[in-house]
Length: 155
Image 1 (cartoon, rainbow, N blue to C red):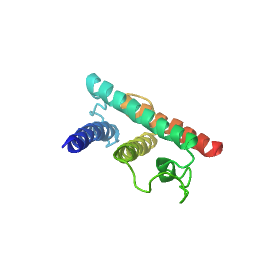
Image 2: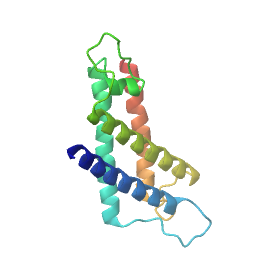
Image 3: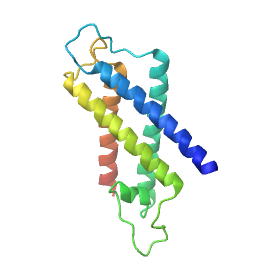
């Protein structure tokens, strides 16, 4: 029962994060109607920013462990290393590794969606055209790319 409660809570947090981010993206997508305000409530923006920061921290931790542990299963999932058949790492993922993988995938989908929206809006940071959350999250994507590239170079 303990495991199912954790998965339900994770689904709630990631689902709410995804819903909020895609609402901001939808408000920021140009439709030709100049009367649409792309702003989202301040409390919601704070919550989404905090969850985004936690997801970014999770991503950074996974990259760090991939560097520290040469046979990291999550590192292998991200294409950073290969698991040796003779290593002591089990071939199946733990519940924590599955949770981290799901969180990274949700975060990357949101990042890419924000970048596409930001590009479609002409890379503007004008808050009358695009939600500030979308433009800031899109900029975070480039930091994630640099971190991933740096991890690849360190291998």
